[in-house]
Image (tube, rainbow, N blue to C red):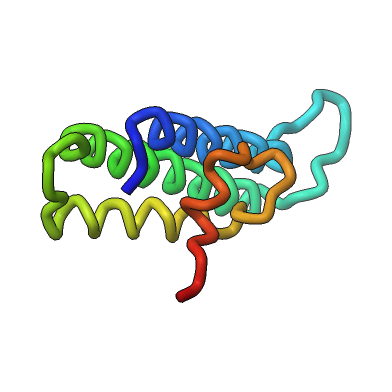
Length: 107
């Protein structure tokens, strides 16, 4: 399980990556947009879903972390947040102290 600081840092990292994904939906006035309206909507909705899921899991984990024994709900929330972050586990900007959380050692 992460520490509260690791949880905060991972949440911030996920939100930063989601925010970076919004680039394709931003239209510069006076230029032709490379994506069709429906494509921009799909990207925007996907980013909003990542934001919402990350925020929900972060809040749930923040509430439950610190208990002596994590219950099944806490473990499930942590597994879901790890799964959400998995696409970025090898990202060069992922802070070193978070890498072990996303790349657990194999037994």
